[in-house]
Image (cartoon, rainbow, N blue to C red; front, top):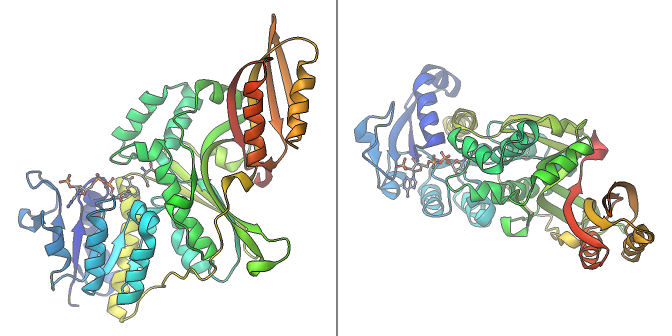
Length: 437
Ligand code: NDP
Ligand code: HSE
C-alpha cells in the first residue's frame, strides 16, 4: 500500500476540480487502485492565491523541479498550451513518470514528439480529457474499436461554440453575449479565439482522426473554419430550412476506388459550421454538451454524448486516466501505445465532397434563374432545391445543392458573386449529416 505520488501541473478550472475529487474520493480511489494517491506538489503561476484542499507548502512555481523529483510517480498536466507543457511532459516521461494530460493543443500540434517519447521511455500516456471533456471517447477508439475499421467520426467537440450557437438559435442571443456567458461558465479556453475560430475543435479532430485511422494527423492538416462569421441571417436561414447551425468536426476515411493503400485513398479532416436537419440527433445537442458519432465497419454507428467542457466533467476524465495509470503502476504494466502505421495522406479540402446552402439577393426579372442555373451547370454542381421569395424589384433565392467537390461549390459561389444580376450572396453554409438521421 505504498502511496503513489502525484504531481499536479496547473490548478485552474480543471486542476482545482481534480484536487477536489482526489480529496473527496480518496478512500474509494485507494480501494479501486490498490494503493493511495498522494498529492506531492501543485505547480501554478501565482503563489498568492488560496487553493482549496491544497496545503500551501505543496504549491510551487518550479514545475520542472516538481516533475523530475524522485518521489513523484505520476504527472497530471492541466496547464494547457504548448510550452512549458511540452518540456514538462517530456522531462516527466524521461524520468520514468506516468503522464496524464488534457492538453489537446499540444497533442495535436506536436503529438509526434509526445507519443514518440512515450514509446521511447516506455511511459504511460493517457489523455481522455483532451477530446470531448467527460465523454469516454478516446479509450473506446484506442482500445474497444482497435479491432474494427473506422470509416467516419463526426460530431460536436467544442462546448463553447455549441453554447454560443445554441443561444443564438434558441433565444436570439448575440454572439458576444453568448460568448461572455460561456466564459463565465468555465467552458472557454484561456484565449477564447481558440474556441470561436475553431482551433480547439481542429486540435480535437486531429487527435480523433489519428486514433481512428492509425495515421499521423496534426492540427495543421485540418481544414478549419470557426463561427465568427456565422450571422443572424445564417441562423434564420437554417431555421427556415428546419435545420440548425452546428460547428462540426468531421474525420472521414476516403475509399480508394482501386483498393490501394489498404482500401483508403486518404483521410479528410475538417471543422466548419454547417447546417444539419433539426431531426438529426446532433441537432438536439444543447448548451455546452458534445456528441460524437463513430461509424465503423463491423460495429456500425455508435453515439457518444455528454458534457464536453467545464471543470468537474473534465476532471472526471482526468481522474479516470489517473486511476488507469496508477493501476498500471501497481500491476507493473502499461497502457496501449499509439501506432500510426497506415500513413494515409490528408486530402485537400477542395477534394472533399460536401453540399452547400446558398442564399442570395437577385434582380427579379426574366432570365435570372436561367443565368444562375447555367453557372451551377458550368461547375458541374447539381441543384437539389430552389426557393424564391419576391420583394418588389428584387427576390431572395435559396439554393441547396447536391453533393459535389468543395472546390466546385466554392468556385460556383465565387461566380455568383461576380454576376451582375446578383445583388448580394448573403449566406453560404455547408449542409451535413442528413444521411445518419
Ligand atoms: P486554466 O487557465 O483555468 O488553468 C491553467 C492553470 O495552469 C492555472 O492554475 C495556472 O496557474 C497554471 N499555469 C499556467 N501557466 C503555468 C506555468 N508556466 N507553470 C505552472 N502553472 C501554470 O485552464 P483550464 O483548467 O481550463 O485548462 C487546463 C487544460 O485542460 C488545457 O489544456 C485545456 O485545453 C484542457 N481542457 C479544459 C477544459 C475546460 O472545460 N476548461 C475541458 C477539456 C480540456 P494560476 O492558477 O496561478 O494562473
Ligand atoms: N474550450 C473547450 C470547449 C473546453 O469549449 O469545448 C473543452 O475542451
